[in-house]
Image (cartoon, rainbow, N blue to C red; front, side, top):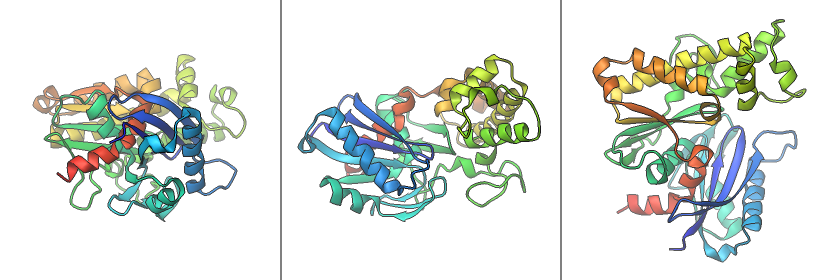
Length: 322
């Protein structure tokens, strides 16, 4: 098998593609494109453009690439390569596999974004050597990947790990999935941004208005800077999100009692306060014996967990069939 593959991390905020050495996990080149902007291009066109630019920048022949792997933020049909339902991408029943195979004449493999990030972490990241663990990523949404006895666990219908849609407040905030009170509606970066902008619209002062350009989105770097400047609105928003996220982690610790929980996502990586308060509260809320057996850490591959994991899908699926 050729050692190079294209990996694509398809999230609600960005498309991150790269050429990966699947024997070492090294990312040779990477290209990023916004998922949502004002150009009205279909998401599949943006994926194609990102892959084409990755191949061009890598200066490699498509003949040297073994496959293309996609980790998509949503529910997927792995066998058919169809993105079934992705509310944060506004995508439903998108036949990614067929379209990309026709375009690039390469085998295409599809997985859930956090599932493939988990594959990346257990292969080349901080999950190496652990048999039972959970990877939780906080971004546009909140998702998780579960590893049981060294293998990714998908559940009876392939949707295991949807931690963002456990109910943390019955009848609470409306989530993108259509339900009320989901963890994602309280602890995701999207939820944090909504709370901050909502407070500003109500007349509360925040340095965020000076840090973010007009009509721009609130990024992790803006939140980090605002916390450094002791912004009360941002502090309260992050503290609330950490409170809910820690409750989700405590539930995982008590129910599954994994050896390890890996936390990832831009906000987790960039904002130490968010990460630190989340793990402190998660341990405090967990049963003592369960908590003592579970370590919590950040990702080893950082922003590349999903990219590397998706590039490994061909190898992973081949092994899974054995």
